[in-house]
Image (cartoon, rainbow, N blue to C red; front, side):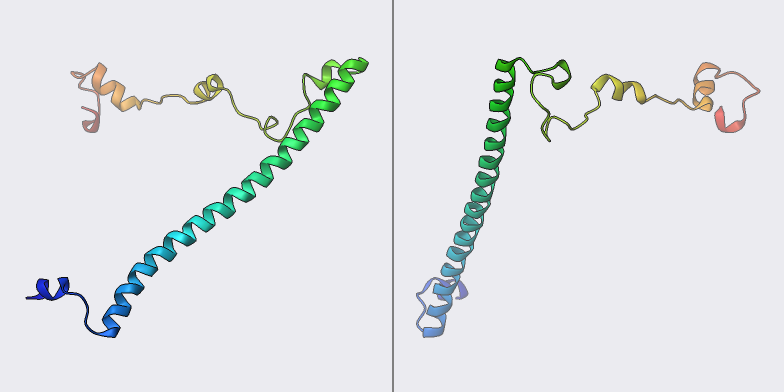
Length: 123
């Protein structure tokens, strides 16, 4: 009985309005999500344009200095930017800094299982 009434079209104006409202609510949710995404992409585009202009200026300055012969070894190939100046530890040094620690009681338990001088917790 409830299923049949749920499938019938709404007869009352309030029920019709609620049905339309739920459909519109879904539309506005999707619309707002798309609008937020569009705004975020516009901001990201502006940031990338600004960064691109800075990099182009740096490259132009470097090439002018290279032609003039005023580039020194201390400057390197290109001046460092924010992204390239971040210090990242090499993988080898990260691995070297971590050491495996094995508890002595564990070693004694597995190497000397028949030793009677071990405390009861280690046998």
